Length: 313
Image 1 (tube, helix red, strand yellow):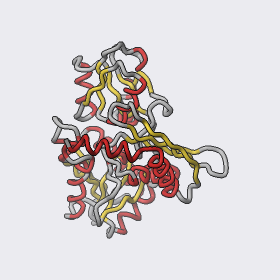
Image 2 (cartoon, rainbow, N blue to C red):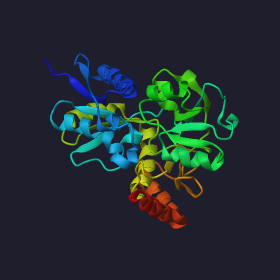
Image 3 (cartoon, one colour):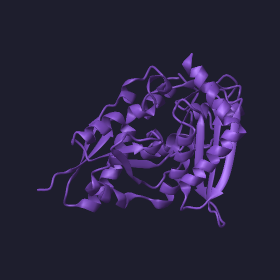
């Protein structure tokens, strides 16, 4: 009997929901071969009392899954693409990027219907420096505070009254069946998403051609093209969770139908450097590089240096 195709996944409810979704898609491709899950806890899940930027970044969410693949305990790993480092370790590759869910940020509150309704001094929880920076810029009277833990843990803190509102990814809430908790979906123009936000990436070993071939059937080309452009912006800028950076690509009419918008901000949002360009779908990384260069020429390098100095203190 052929061995099962094994998916490594984090044990958080959202990660499990995403892995189960991929499991169902793969089962339809490889039946009667079984597809099973190998849940595990990562360092990123264990460290909840410190910001990710201070303890090693988003790579903490994927390392254990890569170890499982390298040791032959799993064939592939399912990730939220925005959590995947811009440079994968040698020996690993992204074999597929699935169709993107709603990429917008979501406002969640038991008392208020929108971000604009919050009173001065209201406590808003977010795990994202990007969200905090861009929303502080628009709402300087609000008190943005870091919040860690899985989505259900954050919602429990909100419901206990520790926060007046949360800003979360709409896609995560939808995948967990919690879409009814969303009071407002923030327009892209107000809160530009993180690179790869709402897309799922499937990682495999570079030498596992058989698994890569199977997984590639799930690749959604329009989403993959957009995410390649977005991730190139972040890669060029040395992007990580220490840097408030946004990059979002979408499709428009015209000879250059791929539009890429991006920004880099400082921590309080008082400085925000923006750039936008159009490109073609056959060269998404070139478009990402163009937008990154525009950001740098407009002063993003200074913002990045200042953030590096701040983190080193």
